[in-house]
Amino acid sequence: MNILWDADPTAIEKYRFALGNDTQALDSAAMVARVLHDNLGVQQVIIGPEVALDPACELAESARLDRPELGVILLRHRVDVTTLSQALRSGMREVVTADDHTALADALRRSRELTSKLVGHTAGGSGQEGNIITVFSAKGGVGKTTMSTNIGTYLARTGSKTLLVDLDLSFGDVAISLQLIPARSVFDAVGMSGHLDEQGLGSLVTTHEDSGLDVVCAPNDPSDADRIPVHVVTELLKVARKHYDYIIVDTPPSFTEQVLAACDISSALVLIATLDIPAVKNLRVAIDTLDMLGSPKDARIIVLNRADAKVGLRPEDVVTAIKTPIAVNIPSSMTVPASVNRGVPIVLDDPKGPVSVAIRELCDAHIRQRFGSPVNGFDTRQQRKGLFRGRR
Image (cartoon, rainbow, N blue to C red; front, side, top):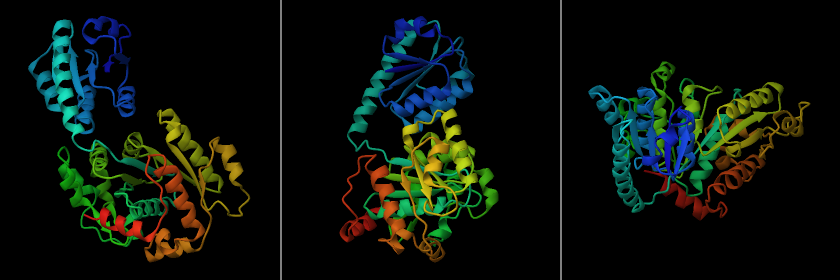
Protein backbone atom coordinates (compact mmCIF):
# COMPACT_ATOMS: atom_id res chain seq x y z
CA MET A 1 0.00 0.00 0.00
CA ASN A 2 1.13 3.57 -0.80
CA ILE A 3 0.30 6.91 0.76
CA LEU A 4 0.24 10.08 -1.32
CA TRP A 5 0.64 13.17 0.85
CA ASP A 6 -0.65 16.09 -1.19
CA ALA A 7 -3.16 18.87 -0.53
CA ASP A 8 -4.33 18.78 -4.16
CA PRO A 9 -7.52 16.61 -4.28
CA THR A 10 -6.81 15.73 -7.92
CA ALA A 11 -3.25 14.57 -7.23
CA ILE A 12 -4.07 10.88 -6.92
CA GLU A 13 -5.53 10.87 -10.43
CA LYS A 14 -2.63 12.94 -11.73
CA TYR A 15 -0.10 10.31 -10.59
CA ARG A 16 -2.29 7.23 -11.12
CA PHE A 17 -0.05 5.89 -13.89
CA ALA A 18 2.91 5.62 -11.52
CA LEU A 19 1.12 4.89 -8.25
CA GLY A 20 -1.41 2.25 -9.29
CA ASN A 21 -4.68 1.67 -7.45
CA ASP A 22 -3.44 0.69 -3.99
CA THR A 23 -2.82 4.27 -2.89
CA GLN A 24 -4.47 6.39 -0.20
CA ALA A 25 -4.42 10.18 -0.56
CA LEU A 26 -3.96 12.26 2.60
CA ASP A 27 -3.62 16.02 2.93
CA SER A 28 -1.82 16.60 6.26
CA ALA A 29 1.24 15.44 8.16
CA ALA A 30 -0.89 14.48 11.18
CA MET A 31 -3.08 12.18 9.08
CA VAL A 32 -0.04 10.56 7.46
CA ALA A 33 1.55 9.96 10.87
CA ARG A 34 -1.65 8.44 12.21
CA VAL A 35 -2.07 6.04 9.27
CA LEU A 36 1.60 5.00 9.49
CA HIS A 37 1.16 4.33 13.20
CA ASP A 38 -2.01 2.26 12.71
CA ASN A 39 -1.24 0.45 9.45
CA LEU A 40 1.99 -1.52 9.15
CA GLY A 41 0.98 -2.46 5.61
CA VAL A 42 2.02 0.93 4.23
CA GLN A 43 5.27 0.47 2.31
CA GLN A 44 5.76 3.76 0.42
CA VAL A 45 4.99 7.42 1.11
CA ILE A 46 5.05 9.80 -1.84
CA ILE A 47 5.18 13.46 -0.85
CA GLY A 48 3.69 15.90 -3.33
CA PRO A 49 5.47 18.95 -4.76
CA GLU A 50 3.36 21.47 -2.83
CA VAL A 51 4.30 20.07 0.58
CA ALA A 52 6.97 22.25 2.21
CA LEU A 53 10.42 20.69 2.41
CA ASP A 54 10.89 20.97 6.19
CA PRO A 55 7.78 18.98 7.25
CA ALA A 56 8.52 16.48 4.49
CA CYS A 57 12.02 15.94 5.89
CA GLU A 58 10.66 15.68 9.45
CA LEU A 59 8.39 12.83 8.35
CA ALA A 60 11.30 11.05 6.65
CA GLU A 61 13.52 11.43 9.73
CA SER A 62 10.80 10.03 11.98
CA ALA A 63 10.14 7.12 9.60
CA ARG A 64 13.86 6.32 9.45
CA LEU A 65 13.77 5.57 13.19
CA ASP A 66 10.32 4.05 13.50
CA ARG A 67 9.86 2.25 10.17
CA PRO A 68 13.25 1.79 8.46
CA GLU A 69 11.64 -0.41 5.81
CA LEU A 70 9.31 2.43 4.74
CA GLY A 71 10.20 4.12 1.46
CA VAL A 72 9.76 7.91 1.26
CA ILE A 73 9.88 9.56 -2.16
CA LEU A 74 9.76 13.32 -2.65
CA LEU A 75 8.23 15.06 -5.65
CA ARG A 76 9.39 18.59 -6.56
CA HIS A 77 8.60 20.88 -9.46
CA ARG A 78 12.33 21.52 -9.76
CA VAL A 79 15.14 19.50 -8.20
CA ASP A 80 18.15 21.51 -7.07
CA VAL A 81 21.26 20.47 -5.17
CA THR A 82 20.11 21.95 -1.86
CA THR A 83 16.75 20.17 -1.95
CA LEU A 84 18.35 16.90 -2.99
CA SER A 85 20.99 16.93 -0.26
CA GLN A 86 18.52 17.90 2.49
CA ALA A 87 16.03 15.25 1.40
CA LEU A 88 18.62 12.46 1.24
CA ARG A 89 20.10 13.45 4.61
CA SER A 90 16.64 13.11 6.17
CA GLY A 91 16.33 9.54 4.93
CA MET A 92 14.28 9.90 1.74
CA ARG A 93 15.11 7.32 -0.89
CA GLU A 94 14.68 9.44 -4.00
CA VAL A 95 13.71 12.91 -5.21
CA VAL A 96 11.82 12.99 -8.52
CA THR A 97 10.57 15.76 -10.80
CA ALA A 98 6.79 15.89 -10.39
CA ASP A 99 5.90 15.84 -14.09
CA ASP A 100 8.15 12.85 -14.92
CA HIS A 101 5.73 9.99 -14.24
CA THR A 102 8.02 7.38 -15.76
CA ALA A 103 10.82 8.38 -13.38
CA LEU A 104 8.36 8.20 -10.46
CA ALA A 105 7.26 4.70 -11.48
CA ASP A 106 10.91 3.60 -11.68
CA ALA A 107 11.67 5.16 -8.29
CA LEU A 108 8.71 3.33 -6.74
CA ARG A 109 9.84 0.04 -8.25
CA ARG A 110 13.36 0.44 -6.82
CA SER A 111 11.94 1.48 -3.47
CA ARG A 112 9.61 -1.54 -3.35
CA GLU A 113 12.52 -3.85 -4.08
CA LEU A 114 14.54 -2.33 -1.23
CA THR A 115 11.53 -2.52 1.11
CA SER A 116 11.08 -6.22 0.28
CA LYS A 117 14.72 -6.91 1.16
CA LEU A 118 14.47 -4.96 4.42
CA VAL A 119 11.21 -6.64 5.43
CA GLY A 120 12.76 -10.02 4.71
CA HIS A 121 15.73 -9.12 6.87
CA THR A 122 13.50 -7.96 9.71
CA ALA A 123 11.45 -11.14 9.52
CA GLY A 124 14.57 -13.05 10.53
CA GLY A 125 14.36 -11.43 13.97
CA SER A 126 11.47 -11.28 16.40
CA GLY A 127 9.80 -8.34 14.64
CA GLN A 128 7.79 -7.77 17.83
CA GLU A 129 7.76 -4.31 19.36
CA GLY A 130 6.79 -3.46 22.91
CA ASN A 131 3.83 -1.37 23.99
CA ILE A 132 4.05 2.18 25.32
CA ILE A 133 1.56 3.00 28.09
CA THR A 134 1.38 6.66 29.08
CA VAL A 135 -0.06 7.50 32.51
CA PHE A 136 -1.60 10.97 32.59
CA SER A 137 -3.72 13.33 34.65
CA ALA A 138 -4.31 17.00 34.00
CA LYS A 139 -4.35 17.62 37.77
CA GLY A 140 -1.56 17.01 40.24
CA GLY A 141 -1.97 15.05 43.45
CA VAL A 142 -4.15 12.26 42.08
CA GLY A 143 -1.55 9.50 42.51
CA LYS A 144 -0.17 9.41 38.99
CA THR A 145 3.45 8.62 39.90
CA THR A 146 2.33 6.05 42.47
CA MET A 147 0.25 4.39 39.77
CA SER A 148 3.10 4.50 37.23
CA THR A 149 5.66 2.98 39.60
CA ASN A 150 3.29 0.22 40.73
CA ILE A 151 2.19 -0.66 37.19
CA GLY A 152 5.83 -0.85 36.13
CA THR A 153 6.82 -2.88 39.19
CA TYR A 154 4.00 -5.38 38.76
CA LEU A 155 4.63 -5.88 35.04
CA ALA A 156 8.34 -6.41 35.72
CA ARG A 157 7.59 -8.96 38.47
CA THR A 158 5.35 -10.96 36.13
CA GLY A 159 8.32 -11.58 33.83
CA SER A 160 7.78 -8.83 31.25
CA LYS A 161 10.81 -6.75 30.40
CA THR A 162 9.60 -3.33 31.52
CA LEU A 163 10.95 0.22 31.37
CA LEU A 164 9.56 3.18 33.31
CA VAL A 165 10.35 6.63 31.86
CA ASP A 166 9.87 9.70 34.06
CA LEU A 167 8.69 12.38 31.65
CA ASP A 168 7.94 14.92 34.37
CA LEU A 169 11.16 16.57 33.29
CA SER A 170 11.10 19.45 35.81
CA PHE A 171 9.82 17.80 38.99
CA GLY A 172 9.80 14.05 38.42
CA ASP A 173 9.46 11.89 41.55
CA VAL A 174 9.95 8.39 40.18
CA ALA A 175 13.54 8.12 41.45
CA ILE A 176 12.70 9.14 45.00
CA SER A 177 9.52 7.02 44.99
CA LEU A 178 11.61 3.92 44.24
CA GLN A 179 14.61 5.01 46.36
CA LEU A 180 16.88 5.11 43.31
CA ILE A 181 20.10 7.07 42.94
CA PRO A 182 20.47 7.44 39.16
CA ALA A 183 23.81 8.16 37.57
CA ARG A 184 22.15 9.42 34.37
CA SER A 185 18.75 10.72 33.28
CA VAL A 186 16.59 11.56 30.27
CA PHE A 187 18.77 14.64 29.75
CA ASP A 188 21.75 12.45 28.86
CA ALA A 189 19.83 11.21 25.81
CA VAL A 190 20.23 14.66 24.23
CA GLY A 191 23.90 14.00 23.44
CA MET A 192 22.94 10.75 21.69
CA SER A 193 20.22 12.31 19.54
CA GLY A 194 20.04 10.76 16.09
CA HIS A 195 22.10 7.69 16.98
CA LEU A 196 20.55 6.37 20.19
CA ASP A 197 20.71 2.56 20.23
CA GLU A 198 20.23 -0.27 22.72
CA GLN A 199 23.62 0.30 24.30
CA GLY A 200 22.99 4.04 24.64
CA LEU A 201 19.57 3.42 26.15
CA GLY A 202 21.08 0.94 28.58
CA SER A 203 23.50 3.62 29.78
CA LEU A 204 20.54 5.79 30.84
CA VAL A 205 18.83 3.05 32.85
CA THR A 206 18.80 2.57 36.62
CA THR A 207 17.42 -0.81 37.75
CA HIS A 208 15.08 -1.21 40.72
CA GLU A 209 16.67 -4.23 42.35
CA ASP A 210 13.59 -5.57 44.16
CA SER A 211 11.54 -5.90 40.99
CA GLY A 212 13.91 -5.84 38.03
CA LEU A 213 12.12 -2.74 36.69
CA ASP A 214 14.37 -0.55 34.53
CA VAL A 215 13.93 3.20 34.99
CA VAL A 216 15.00 6.26 33.02
CA CYS A 217 14.76 9.04 35.59
CA ALA A 218 14.00 12.73 35.21
CA PRO A 219 16.89 15.23 35.49
CA ASN A 220 17.94 16.38 38.94
CA ASP A 221 18.13 19.98 37.74
CA PRO A 222 14.69 21.35 36.71
CA SER A 223 16.38 23.78 34.31
CA ASP A 224 17.47 20.81 32.17
CA ALA A 225 13.85 20.23 31.17
CA ASP A 226 13.91 23.11 28.70
CA ARG A 227 16.96 21.59 26.99
CA ILE A 228 15.32 18.26 26.16
CA PRO A 229 13.76 18.57 22.67
CA VAL A 230 10.63 16.68 21.71
CA HIS A 231 12.45 14.63 19.07
CA VAL A 232 14.83 13.27 21.72
CA VAL A 233 11.91 11.96 23.78
CA THR A 234 10.31 10.43 20.69
CA GLU A 235 13.56 8.75 19.69
CA LEU A 236 14.10 7.38 23.19
CA LEU A 237 10.61 5.84 23.32
CA LYS A 238 10.85 4.37 19.82
CA VAL A 239 14.20 2.77 20.57
CA ALA A 240 12.90 1.50 23.92
CA ARG A 241 9.93 -0.29 22.41
CA LYS A 242 12.29 -2.37 20.26
CA HIS A 243 13.91 -3.79 23.41
CA TYR A 244 11.17 -3.89 26.06
CA ASP A 245 7.80 -5.60 26.36
CA TYR A 246 6.28 -2.57 28.11
CA ILE A 247 7.33 1.06 28.43
CA ILE A 248 5.42 2.96 31.14
CA VAL A 249 5.60 6.76 30.82
CA ASP A 250 4.97 8.91 33.89
CA THR A 251 4.00 12.49 33.02
CA PRO A 252 3.55 15.96 34.50
CA PRO A 253 0.00 17.25 35.02
CA SER A 254 -0.08 19.16 31.72
CA PHE A 255 0.02 18.53 27.98
CA THR A 256 3.63 19.54 27.32
CA GLU A 257 5.10 18.96 23.87
CA GLN A 258 6.92 15.92 25.20
CA VAL A 259 3.71 14.50 26.71
CA LEU A 260 1.82 15.01 23.44
CA ALA A 261 4.62 13.20 21.59
CA ALA A 262 4.41 10.29 24.04
CA CYS A 263 0.61 10.14 23.74
CA ASP A 264 0.88 10.11 19.95
CA ILE A 265 2.97 6.92 19.87
CA SER A 266 1.39 5.19 22.87
CA SER A 267 -0.49 1.93 22.59
CA ALA A 268 -2.64 2.85 25.61
CA LEU A 269 -3.32 5.87 27.83
CA VAL A 270 -4.09 5.43 31.53
CA LEU A 271 -6.08 8.53 32.56
CA ILE A 272 -6.42 9.08 36.30
CA ALA A 273 -8.85 11.13 38.39
CA THR A 274 -10.04 11.28 41.99
CA LEU A 275 -13.43 12.07 43.54
CA ASP A 276 -13.17 15.86 43.52
CA ILE A 277 -14.64 18.41 41.14
CA PRO A 278 -11.30 19.89 39.87
CA ALA A 279 -9.92 16.43 39.05
CA VAL A 280 -13.09 15.37 37.24
CA LYS A 281 -13.25 18.66 35.35
CA ASN A 282 -9.61 18.33 34.26
CA LEU A 283 -10.19 14.72 33.21
CA ARG A 284 -13.07 15.88 31.03
CA VAL A 285 -10.83 18.57 29.51
CA ALA A 286 -8.07 16.00 28.91
CA ILE A 287 -10.50 13.66 27.14
CA ASP A 288 -11.79 16.52 24.97
CA THR A 289 -8.21 17.49 24.11
CA LEU A 290 -7.35 13.93 23.12
CA ASP A 291 -10.51 13.79 20.99
CA MET A 292 -9.46 16.98 19.23
CA LEU A 293 -5.99 15.54 18.57
CA GLY A 294 -7.48 12.40 17.04
CA SER A 295 -6.33 10.05 19.79
CA PRO A 296 -8.22 6.72 19.52
CA LYS A 297 -10.87 6.36 22.23
CA ASP A 298 -10.39 2.62 22.59
CA ALA A 299 -6.79 3.20 23.71
CA ARG A 300 -7.91 4.99 26.89
CA ILE A 301 -8.13 3.30 30.29
CA ILE A 302 -9.93 5.42 32.90
CA VAL A 303 -8.81 4.85 36.49
CA LEU A 304 -10.57 6.38 39.50
CA ASN A 305 -8.15 6.60 42.41
CA ARG A 306 -9.35 6.71 46.03
CA ALA A 307 -12.73 5.76 44.61
CA ASP A 308 -14.35 4.95 47.96
CA ALA A 309 -13.67 8.35 49.55
CA LYS A 310 -16.78 9.80 51.23
CA VAL A 311 -16.60 13.31 49.79
CA GLY A 312 -20.06 13.83 48.29
CA LEU A 313 -19.21 12.49 44.82
CA ARG A 314 -19.74 8.94 43.61
CA PRO A 315 -18.06 7.02 40.80
CA GLU A 316 -21.37 7.14 38.91
CA ASP A 317 -21.20 10.94 39.00
CA VAL A 318 -17.75 10.81 37.39
CA VAL A 319 -19.01 8.53 34.61
CA THR A 320 -21.88 10.95 33.95
CA ALA A 321 -19.47 13.91 33.81
CA ILE A 322 -16.85 12.36 31.52
CA LYS A 323 -19.26 10.24 29.44
CA THR A 324 -16.75 7.39 29.54
CA PRO A 325 -16.84 4.20 31.64
CA ILE A 326 -14.35 3.71 34.45
CA ALA A 327 -12.12 0.68 33.91
CA VAL A 328 -10.83 0.26 37.47
CA ASN A 329 -11.70 1.78 40.85
CA ILE A 330 -8.70 1.98 43.21
CA PRO A 331 -9.76 2.14 46.89
CA SER A 332 -8.29 4.41 49.55
CA SER A 333 -5.76 2.98 51.97
CA MET A 334 -3.35 4.44 54.50
CA THR A 335 -0.87 1.78 53.42
CA VAL A 336 -0.26 3.70 50.18
CA PRO A 337 1.34 6.88 51.62
CA ALA A 338 3.23 4.69 54.10
CA SER A 339 4.68 2.61 51.25
CA VAL A 340 5.55 5.77 49.29
CA ASN A 341 7.42 7.17 52.29
CA ARG A 342 9.38 3.92 52.55
CA GLY A 343 10.11 3.91 48.83
CA VAL A 344 8.51 0.49 48.36
CA PRO A 345 5.75 0.06 45.73
CA ILE A 346 2.47 -1.02 47.32
CA VAL A 347 2.28 -4.14 45.11
CA LEU A 348 5.43 -5.34 46.91
CA ASP A 349 4.76 -3.82 50.32
CA ASP A 350 1.18 -5.10 50.67
CA PRO A 351 0.64 -7.55 47.78
CA LYS A 352 -2.66 -8.94 49.13
CA GLY A 353 -4.18 -5.58 50.09
CA PRO A 354 -7.16 -4.12 48.21
CA VAL A 355 -5.08 -1.43 46.45
CA SER A 356 -2.62 -4.01 45.13
CA VAL A 357 -5.49 -6.24 44.01
CA ALA A 358 -7.02 -3.33 42.06
CA ILE A 359 -3.66 -2.46 40.44
CA ARG A 360 -3.18 -6.08 39.43
CA GLU A 361 -6.66 -6.03 37.87
CA LEU A 362 -5.68 -2.92 35.93
CA CYS A 363 -2.47 -4.53 34.67
CA ASP A 364 -3.89 -7.98 33.94
CA ALA A 365 -7.29 -7.15 32.47
CA HIS A 366 -6.58 -3.83 30.78
CA ILE A 367 -2.89 -4.00 29.81
CA ARG A 368 -1.58 -7.56 29.61
CA GLN A 369 -4.69 -9.12 28.09
CA ARG A 370 -5.14 -6.15 25.76
CA PHE A 371 -1.71 -6.82 24.24
CA GLY A 372 -1.89 -10.58 24.25
CA SER A 373 0.35 -11.33 27.23
CA PRO A 374 -0.54 -14.52 29.13
CA VAL A 375 -2.06 -13.89 32.54
CA ASN A 376 -1.00 -16.76 34.75
CA GLY A 377 -1.23 -15.24 38.18
CA PHE A 378 1.49 -13.82 40.39
CA ASP A 379 3.36 -16.64 42.06
CA THR A 380 6.83 -16.71 43.53
CA ARG A 381 8.40 -18.70 40.70
CA GLN A 382 7.10 -16.23 38.11
CA GLN A 383 8.35 -13.31 40.22
CA ARG A 384 11.87 -14.73 40.38
CA LYS A 385 11.93 -15.29 36.64
CA GLY A 386 10.88 -11.68 36.18
CA LEU A 387 13.63 -10.44 38.44
CA PHE A 388 16.38 -11.92 36.31
CA ARG A 389 14.74 -11.14 32.99
CA GLY A 390 14.30 -7.49 33.81
CA ARG A 391 17.90 -6.84 34.83
CA ARG A 392 20.71 -5.89 32.51
